[in-house]
Structure formats: C-alpha cells, structure tokens
Image 1 (cartoon, rainbow over the protein chains, first blue to last red):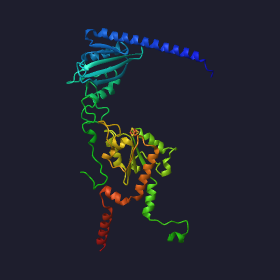
Image 2: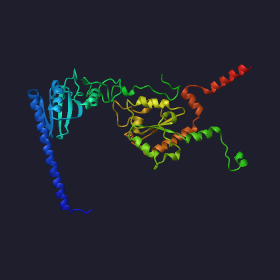
Image 3: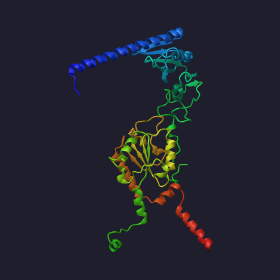
Image 4: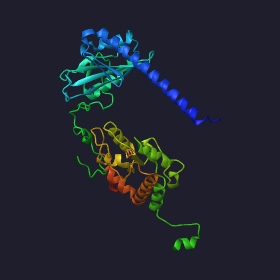
Length: 200
Length: 183
Ligand code: SF4
C-alpha cells in the first residue's frame, strides 16, 4: 500500500467533512419541510413546535395524536416507528400543562428523515388509542410504556406487562415511585439451609 | 503405617468415608447461574487459560438435576429470583453454593426496586467471592474452599439436616421391626 503525502490526506478528509456537512444540511431541510407539512395539516390544532439541535418536535393534542400518526405514515411516508415512549414531567418546570408526555419517534426511510411527535397526557386518566393498527411495531414499546408508566392503550390486543413480572403492583418509572421500591425486592420465600432453621 | 509396611508400596489404607469424600470433593459438577458480566469471568475460569479442570470442577451442567455446586454469577432481579430458587430446589442433595461477585452477594451498585440485595437472603450460600468482577483466581480459590468444606462434611448428617429426616433412626426402626417380625 502506498501512503499518500500528509497534505493530500488533509485535503481528502476536509472534502469528506464538507460532503457530510452538506448532506446533513440537506437532511435537516427535508425534516423541516416534512414537519411543516404536518403543521399545515394540523392547522390551528397544533399545540407547539420546537427544534432542538435541528431535531423537529411537534406537539399535538392527545385527541388528534392517532390521526396525526396515521397521516404521517400514509401521506408523508413515515414508514417506520422507531420508538414509542413517554416521560413524567411531574409538572415541575411550570411549562408543562399535563404530567405525562407521550413521544413517538418516526422515521421516513425513503427520505432519511426523522420526526418526533409528542402529546401531553392527563395524569388522572392516562388512556389513549393504540398505534398498533398503524405500525405493528408499536406492540412492545406500548406494552413497555404501560408497564413503566401505567398509560393504557385502548385497542391494543395484548396489553400486559413486558419487563416486570406479572402481578407487580405499581409503575416504577413514574417519578413519584421510590427508587428502592415498596418492598417488592424483599418479598420472597426464604429457602432455609436446614429444616431445623426453618423460619416458618 | 503398619498395614502399608506389610503390603508394600502399592497399597494405602484409609476409611471408606474419607475415600468417598476425596472423590466427591474432586469431582464437583457446577451449575452456572450466570446472569451478567460475572458470568464472563466464570467462562474464562472454565476455559483453557485458567482451566478449572485442574481442580476437577470443569463439568459444567446446565441441568440443575445433574449438578452439586451452584455458582450464582451476576445480578439477580425480581423476575429472576423465583427461577433461581427453583433451580436451587431442583438440585439434588448434597449441594453447595457460591455467590460470585458484588451483585450476587449484596446487590452491588444496583440499589433499585428491581434488584435483589444479596441472594443469600433467600437461598443458602456457602462461599462468597468479593470483587466486580472477581478474577478467575478468586473463583478458583472459592472452589478450593468449597472442596475443603466438602471434604470435611459428613454427608449423611448433612442430608438428614437438610431433608429433616433422620435416616439413622429410620434404619434402626426398620431393623427393630424386622426383629420383632422374626421373633
Ligand atoms: S459484580 Fe460486577 S462484574 Fe459481577 S455482575 Fe455485578 S457488575 Fe457485573
């Protein structure tokens, strides 16, 4: 293998960086246009729109979440659901009108673009329609959200706990859940070393 | 020794009990319960560089019914604890156990709702290994300790204790009944 002079290598790397930056800029532009399209479709129902480091985030009302997701898939080509998740704001920072925020991360494989759709969710009645009828892949993420936050998805065909054992009480990723649990980890039968030392 | 002097160098005298104990302690069959990174170290100990076979404990059985040494290597969660207990109960007596690493012994750094803070709260443990992860030498040391313990254990007594059945008394009672029937 012949090695190139150092100056040439520097030039090659600089060109590569430039090309990468250009393609990133083009992707950001595509993502912005797609987000624009969703906003235009939502009209006055749009709650909030923000961009964090060029990542487009759209807040929709929870009643229109399902509809928006279906529109994203059918009209805008967001054919992959990367993740469904949620987080608990506890309404701490004052800027959150409700406690839970649902997050859907969508990917448009054709245009290599991503979009984040968020929706505020009421604490007293955390129920929303499932997205499994749009993307089959919403199955396990929704079960995980149910497991960890107690958010229910109507129409989900198999809404059971995914990670925690069946029969677990509570939803531990809610911020008011104690870190060390409520004694679940100490509630097991003890197998004694000898019959004599039995604790029963 | 008198007997050996008389028979020559090809013979040794011992007790049957000691012979059995010697055989038992040098042929431990471990059951690996590897749930996290400690299991990698366990595998390293079993493989050629550290070579557990030198101590007669290389026959790793993935069936608890065929093994007599449980090595708990790794974190045990809420969901895994019933499984571990079941595996321990499926192992036939006499059996021993090693708790390998900080996580299995005390929960390690994972002090959360889902982690068991030390498997010894729920199953009996004979030897603990500190470390995160323990080096293979530590595991070998633990196996040597177990071997020492196995060599000293009176097996029948151990089984009686653990099963709660006094076998000697049962045998005597059987003998008595036989004599009564004959008389
Ligand atoms: S003690 Fe350390 S190496 Fe072993 S399972 Fe825990 S974290 Fe992993």
